[in-house]
Image (cartoon, rainbow, N blue to C red; front, side, top):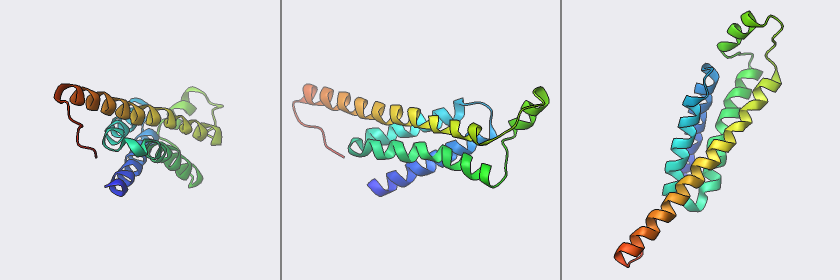
Length: 132
């Protein structure tokens, strides 16, 4: 199960990277990363940091791959119309590393909720909850 969830975390990061590339809005990639890492962190709290790294690396991986293949995000044309001296360069792509912040927040948010739920279950029933 761990390998499947690790693979799904990478896929979620790549999907978030794709949506980050095609959209000028950050909300959709942010929700994808936070949502999936939260779920995965809840399911497998022992490997939360690995899940966060795999989900977080997906965005820069897509952005840098597109940059080096010569693709520009669709919103760059709008920026060039508004600011004629705007140039899309590698510094714009480096900003994609900020995706690690929501990936770690989501993963460890899931871990925290898992601990709270497990503690509440143990307190209410007096027995240890089944582990994953």
